[in-house]
Structure formats: C-alpha cells, structure tokens
Length: 165
Ligand SMILES: [Zn+2]
Ligand SMILES: [Zn+2]
Image (cartoon, rainbow, N blue to C red; front, side, top):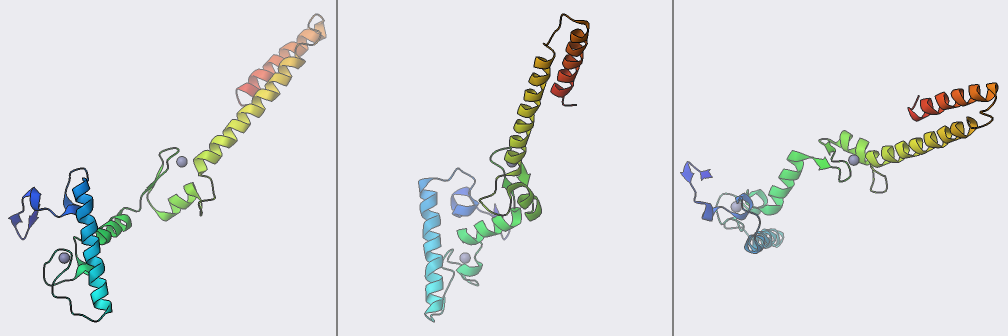
C-alpha cells in the first residue's frame, strides 16, 4: 500500500486495510477506532471543536469523513457491492430487482429456488401417481385380445406420463 507516493510497511496499515484473517487484536483495534469515532460525535454534539481526526489522528478531516473509520468503510463496501447470495442455491443477486425476484420482499417469503423445487417435487409425485394408475389399468384382462390392447395402450400412456409428455 502507498500513501502520497510513500510505501507504507504492512505492520503500519490500519486495521481495515490489512489482508490477514482478522485476529483478536484486529477486532480490538477496529472496536477502538469505532469508540473514538463515537467520541467525535459526542464532542460535536456538545459543541467542542475537533482538533484532529479521532480515528486516525490526521488533521484536515474528522471521523465522519475518515477513510479508516471501520463503519464508513463497511457501509461503502455494502453500497458498492450490493450483492446477495442465496444460501440454498448459490444464486447471486447483483441489484435490488434480482434480489426481490429471488428472495421476495420480506423475510417471510420463501426463496424462489425453494418454491420451484417444491413445485417440481409435487409435479414429479403427481406424474408418478398417474403413471401408476395407468400401470394398474394395463393389468386388467391381459389374457383377452382387448386386454392386450389395453395393456399396450396403458404402458404407452404410463411411459409418456413418466417422460413428462
Ligand atoms: Zn482520520
Ligand atoms: Zn436460491
């Protein structure tokens, strides 16, 4: 990472820009930065002038505009990505319309993939039930000429039903 053309050693990177898996110390640091950002708001509310940024200690800005403020960075990321992945089928929605189409408008609605899987299962089961009826029908009086015709017709019908025709 560089700032103002200067290469900053990794040990100096502020917590949000580190690339390691977050450690206990990283969380502590992020929490401290958030606490300091809260102090910034309290001071402003109480009418105090802010001398430097409480989050990064730089001058020229306050915690509300600091690019090390973990909450601001998290919100920017959330806004920039707007990506939601379905836990059930892996579908990734990249905008509001896709998300509403797949997940519905509220938590109470089932994801579209779950609904279509349930519908498919119901159709499969009904198709199998009808095919089984055709199988039974074909078993009547197979020893007569008519019976054999029925059996052939029934097995053709059952095959077509099972194939989804
Ligand atoms: Zn700052
Ligand atoms: Zn899904």
